[in-house]
Image (cartoon, rainbow, N blue to C red; front, side, top):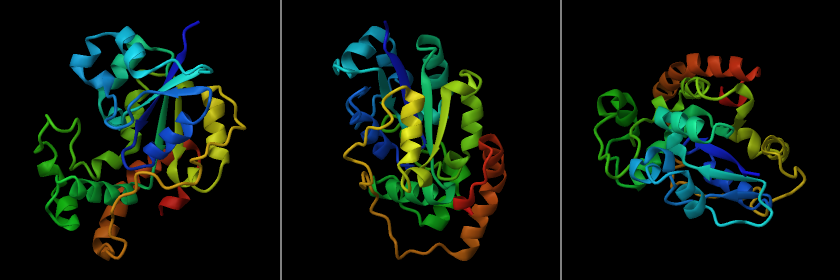
Length: 250
């Protein structure tokens, strides 16, 4: 019997590495290696052309109790090619999105770009000039724009894109704020994946892949207001999709 697959498809700077660890430590889950750089198999043509058998044998190593295999590649959330290819070649796959307050995610994304040498503008300039800079990056170095600070937080747009390829029951949406405040969301995810819900990983409640952000740097109130207004409509649509208020994102 073939082993099922799931994908942590994003969002970037939303706790995906932490979630990877929580899954990788579960004895019944085998995660694709390495975690860095991410596999990105389904958006890297030279890899994808090698076929699914290559994927199975080169990114997974036969963990003995495995019930499901997973991959974390955060670029997948915004690239339709990934959704298309996964749905065609592994059609029963489960898709997991972990989402964070898009304003806080945008700030974290900015400092990540600064840390990695992509960004030289101030945070205010970077956010306000996003549209003109979106495609102005070296595509041989990164798979998605390092400047999509705001657009990347329009989660509902990407979820709706994936819904063209996967049934609702195959898509799981987890909020970062929920995951770091309670063990129950992790147990719910384990249930979705079909593995033992009572397992508690050692990495639970640890800080992983933290940014060197500037806690003393307070966003200008007018910029913060602009960002809240920018995300208001897409957050409302996401709230409707989830059937719950996003009270932590106010």
